[in-house]
Image 1 (cartoon, rainbow, N blue to C red):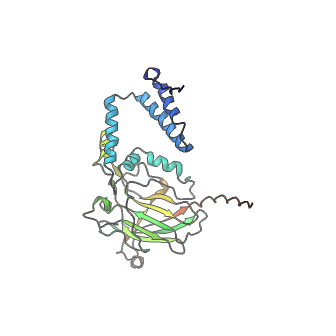
Image 2: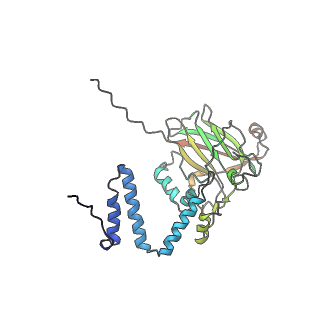
Image 3: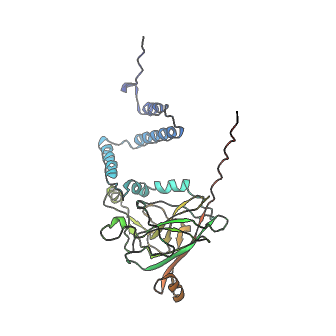
Length: 309
């Protein structure tokens, strides 16, 4: 005789046993980490619902908001990353997974929603400001290991908004593709340099669901002036970070909570005709100098020797 599987009915389910039933339904998940994530997500979501007791209309509105967020995503815009940013989740994930912030290595911060297109390969000293909308600036420094030794051949992926606060993907009719972006390789002494414009504060996009959320909560959408970097080198952990312009507005109220004191750098006005000629910029000019310091990678475990039969 075949025994039918037992199914829990609604009459047997209350708000607590329902959570237990959902978590129990995940017990067949083969991947242990996936099981851990889904079980914790289920518990926390159920706790949220029990705490806030949303009406059906409110829950439907929440689903509609997430649906609209997905529909706002394109090849050059990631509305879900933007949502994660403004809720502080991106920064929390970075803080948990990033460098320790012990002062010896460069601190990490959020990737942001505009690292969506490939940065063009450029020679050291090249100008990434192709539209000339801002104050001329030189950015230079070194890529180093924790012990201070240079990292020759380190790769730096750089991207920023133009002098008016827009990324190339936001103004495809006004900015050429790759404006404000560059992929640079450090020299034999780990040095890098490029020309650009001094970035300005700008609002994150507010024409989608995330903008509606900011308006509903009375929050401003502005980010302080910054340049994005991803620095990587052989046998070292890559770091995703920003360099913020000292004295910029919104350093104390960044819409995505990404400012760290160690990442605020002076873009000093420099009056040096010979240096200006060397860099190929008009004199005087603004000059930001800083080092990016990477953490050595943990050595991998050696493979066990193969036994011969």
